[in-house]
Image (cartoon, rainbow, N blue to C red; front, side, top):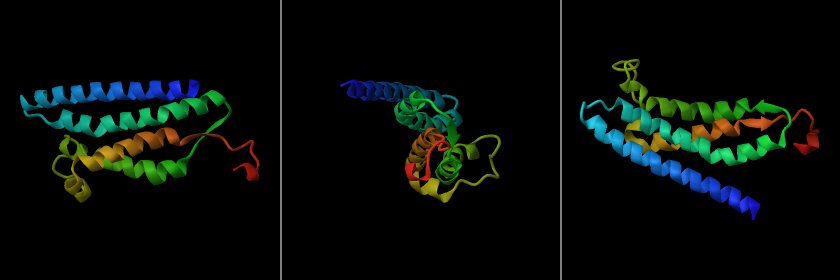
Length: 145
């Protein structure tokens, strides 16, 4: 029952964050129409899924953190999954910024996929960042791995 409540409360918290986030996105959309500055909206649309991905992994991360012990960072997971996802997230808004305007091309995958690609990439990146932190295998034998 305790485990059920733990996950249920996390589900409710994530639902609340989604609700508030969608409300904020609607307000930002309305605000962006006035000066016709879409860059803040593009940044929000790209980065909000990263926050949701972090929230989705947080319950398990906290349970692992509570166990204690030495920690390590899984560079292979982060490099193979996290960095390509981060690239797609950044490319969803960076070409529209003053840094990349005019010379940084938008990947064809983002043009064809619309916001779906950057949303999924944001979720994957946020989740993989916390998933890359693991308890160190230094004290375990080969059979335990």
